[in-house]
Amino acid sequence: MDISIFGPFLQIFAILKVVFANLWQFIVPPFLFLIAFISWVYYRQGQYARSLKFILLNINVSSENIRTAFAAEQIMAGLHGILAPRDPVEKYWRGEFQEAFSFEIVGINGHVNFVIRSPEQFRDLVEAHVYAQYPEAEITEVQDYAAEIPDEITAADSPWEIWGAEMTLAREDAYPIKTYIDIEMATQAAPDEAKLDPLAGLLEVMSNLREGEQMWLQIIAEPTDDSWKDEGEALVRKLIGAKEAKKKSGVLKDFIEEWTEVVVQTVTQAPFAPPTFASKKAAEKDDSPHSLMQFLSPGEQEAVKAIQRNISKVGYRDKIRMIYLMRKDVYDKSLLKSRTAAFIGAFTQFATTNLNTFKLTRKTSAHYWFPTSRLNKRKKQILSEYKSRSLSDGASYFLNTEELATLFHFPTITVKAPLVERIEVKKAMPPKGLPTV
Image 1: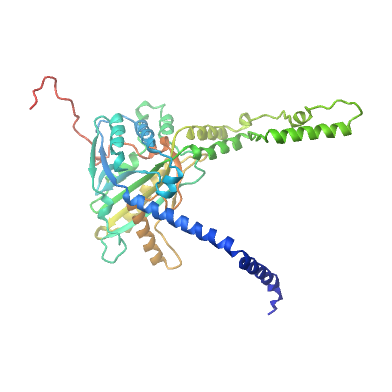
Image 2 (image 1 turned 135 degrees about the vertical axis):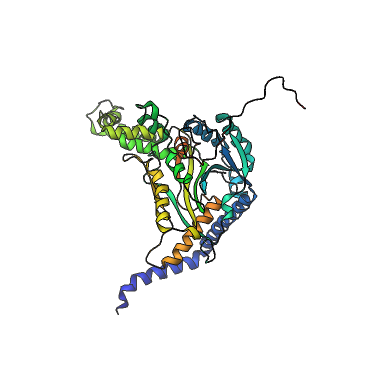
């Protein structure tokens, strides 16, 4: 074997060795400091996370509710108020981070509940915004239903079989999904169908669960600032062919460039010809249109308008998980496929070919190399992440309040699923003059 081919690599290695031997004191300390800093931040964030207390609030609305997802959007907009940017001391020394909510729809043995998991200090805020939109709602603190499922879900003696997956957006976040507004507009020609509930299909599936079946839907939502809109604004400019604004170069640079041009003109022009200062501006003048919006196809124009509407509202950083559980004593492979297909199919109504849609990711399936061990690992992982309501594991994305309200809102009177937990008796204030104890 000819070792001459390794000559250049050996020379480079020798040079790096000499450089490191002479400059290690300038390389190693910053590297160690960076590792120590990252470890410190993670340590402090862990402490801060353990200091937070969370509660689960079960929310029931009236069976005669006529309020659409718009009311839920107002709740989402109000809860966005917990956004609190941290300064460097709070972020890196104390380990503080932005708190998040978890909006969950839970079907257990055919009974369907709407649950909001909130930091305990924001309980009053959640209740205030829910009551503001649904004055007759009943809000009850409940135990965590997910904690009743053992962590060792794949153990031989575990009574449960589990399927799980995450949902992510198929395209850039700026492209919106089909929302409740789009669904209502599509049916506005038929007054009797104008109040179709986009969650009706999912609630019907959950309501038909048998004893020993559970379906969980979790939407983690962390309020975020407007920085997520930059991608959408850039995408709009790209679609309409708008020119990027030229950055100002500064007074000193402009002064030097301008007088350099004057000197060049003086040397190259005829004697005594007065120099001009407008040649650069004239050269930069462009009569081409500032936007190609008028030349776009109807579909492209619709996409631009949808993106602009999407980024006009406040947003959350999100992650969606779904889990289906079945007791092994009632396990049926065909039923498992049917339930999961219905679960996934409930999200297809939010898809549009020219905008955005959801797709499955990180689902509990494995093939080829060591499929059994890899499958068991994924099952335990998604259950653990669901229980912890983790937002940091896997890819997240941004949804605005309109999109969130489409995915999580309380059922209207048009939803006929019989086992959705609702208030059957309308409450009223006691009559005036009623004697009190």
